Structures are given as C-alpha cells and as structure tokens.
Image 1 (tube, helix red, strand yellow):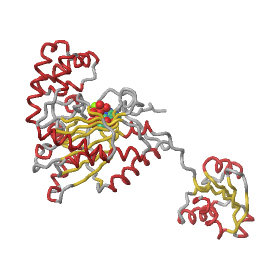
Image 2 (image 1 turned 60 degrees about the vertical axis):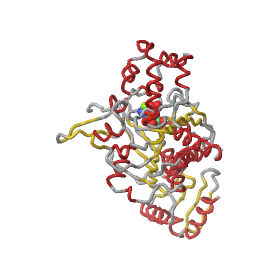
Image 3 (image 1 turned 30 degrees about the vertical axis):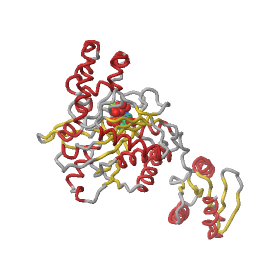
Image 4 (image 1 turned 120 degrees about the horizontal axis):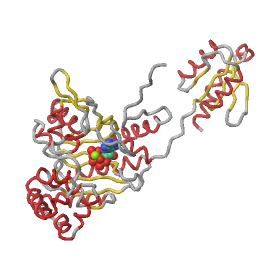
Length: 417
Ligand code: ATP
Ligand code: MG
C-alpha cells in the first residue's frame, strides 16, 4: 500500500453527514439577505497580494503573519484572508459606483489565515458576509446590524450579545491615539511584544489585546479613564447616537464596549461584534463596521461603506445537529431494470429514490431500505406482472399492495403530512 496523505493541519473536510447544516446556513442567508435587497457576489479565492496589504492594512496580524502568499510568474498572489477587499476591488472594477446607491452585496465562501488551529479557529474557514456601499447616514449602519441579528434569529440564535463602539473619524481619532500613547508610556516595558510593536504604528489596536497582563494594565484606573473618555467629535457622536437610537427603536439589545476596536485597519465610526457565551475563548461569531475610506484607498471614488462577516464554523457549532434526510423510498426488487424504470419515474415526479445497483439478496435490500428510506417499494415478480407495487412503511412496518398508478399520491400524501 502507498503512504497515506492526511488533510492539511487547520483544514477540515465537510462530510456528507454535516453538509445539511451548511445548506441550512446558506439557504437562510439567501432568504434573509434577499428580503433586504442584497445580491450575492462571488469573487476569486486568490487576488494580487497588494490588494490585501492595502485593503486590510499592513499593521494587521492578518497581513503581517497570517497570509498564504505564493509567487506565480513573478506575481505575488494571496489566498483571500477575508472578502471585503475582494468585494471592494470588484465594486470598483465593475463600475458599481455608477449604480444608484445603495449597492448591497453578500457573499459566502472559504477564507485562509495562517493562525494557530484550535477550537473555533482553522486555517481554512468559511465566512458569510454583507457589504453596503454608498450610504453615509447612520441608517445604513443600523440596517446591517439589524440584518445580522435577524439572520442569527432565523438560525435559532436569539441570545447573542451585540457590542458596538465608535472609532470616530481619522481627525478625532488622532487626539485619542495621542492620549492613549501618553498614558501607556510608563507601562511600555510591561506590554506584550505585539503591543510594543503596535504602540507606534497603531496604538488603538492595543485595546484589542487578549494577553492577560495587557488587559490588567488597561484596567488601571488612570489608564481606564483615558480609554473610556469620550474623544469623538460632535459629528461622529451624532452619528453614533443615531445608530443607537435606530437599534433601540428596532428593539435590538446591545452594549457599548469602548475596548472594541476590531482587528482591521480600515474601520471608522461604527464597529461591532456579536458574541456568544457558548463558544469558549473564540467567542465572536460576527465582526463588522463602517469603512468609508477603503474604496478610495483601493483606487475607487470616495464611497462610504459598511458591512460585516460571520464565521460559519462558529455559527454551526452553536446550532444543533440536523438529522440526515431520509430517502422517500428505496426500491426492493430482483429485476434491476424494473427498479431502474420505477426509480426514474418517481425521481421525475420529485421524490428522492434509490435502489440496489448490485443485485443483492431481497433481505439485504430490505435491510438497506429500513436504514435509508421512509418506504420500501417492493417489486416482486407478481407485482411486476400485475402493474402493482407493495409499499412498506418502514416506521410502522405496515405493508399494502397498490396499483402503480396510485403510488405517487400515496407517497405525496405522506410527504405533505
Ligand atoms: P477573532 O477575534 O475571532 O480572531 P477576527 O476579528 O479576526 O476574529 P474577522 O476578521 O472580523 O475576525 O472575521 C469575522 C468572523 O470570522 C469572526 O468573528 C469569526 O467568527 C470568524 N473567524 C475569523 N477567523 C477565523 C478562523 N481562523 N477560524 C474560524 N473562524 C474565524
Ligand atoms: Mg483573528
């Protein structure tokens, strides 16, 4: 035997017995997002590396440590670590700014990040997300948050916590960054290595640090006071208040978390996360926010935008397993050509039907039927001669012989009941 080759660390097969949970996530996404006017977009899984360097930001962990980058013909390409940059590229490239605003898009698919694999963290994982382009007003922020909550509700997830914050605009944020740096300066040597590196380049990101010793520093009263202080300008404050009052009116519960800054560089004003208490340490299912400068940074016209992404593996781990669907019927017969014909007839009428392709014994076929189907349809010689079929309900074991022309309504009644 040849040497066996395993799946790559941090990646997983989605097996047939799990796939209905994925269909469920995807079907609900299509259903709910369509209600709000979002259209699906599918962009390539790899893009030119520079798109992510500029679009995600070169001070982020994603760009610095986590990208799967490879060379082909002297071009540096990268497997997408997230899909906002790709969607924005496509928005610009396909002239979508000429469409009347808002342009509402959604996507789903695999993303790739070289992170340490653990519960809730993979190297190939899946996201479903939405992006709304062209609206600067707070109603857009509120709509995408409402959409996220309603999508989660449609999946039966009602008790998740929405956290929101405002990062202000580049102008008011400068002053805040300065104050954060000042108050943390005496603690510099006590910060973790990552935080020391971020201190100059992107001091806001420190607040996001998950290292306990850093978190303890941010809890010190004089430091906490600066972190919690209101720094945003009047316009940004007005925007944030409006977002909150929309959410209040829509009965969306949320908490304001001043430490919420999000991992990506491009956000301004509203940022939010949705968390679950049932996920252990990787507890965020959804992250998003407003990114008014990204379209311009990637070479498009100034276009405000807001969006979010959810981790589909994390969503699925919160949803109970779905029982595998049984076939409507399994045909048991010694004549495979008759079984073939009946199966095709029923399939054409919309039923899910299988039969034995390998001429197994009658009893073996019946055994198989009782494992995979609701009904066994027995086609013995006598039934075939008389144009009949014996229908055995595999839950109750009740069996009756009926004319073939009545078979459809028999199965149909059961399907509808
Ligand atoms: P986290 O704090 O969990 O690392 P993040 O801020 O890096 O999340 P985003 O880039 O905003 O996450 O992605 C949105 C969502 O995608 C996350 O809330 C999470 O549910 C999911 N996600 C992110 N990275 C992974 C991963 N490596 N494996 C599985 N799911 C992930
Ligand atoms: Mg992350």
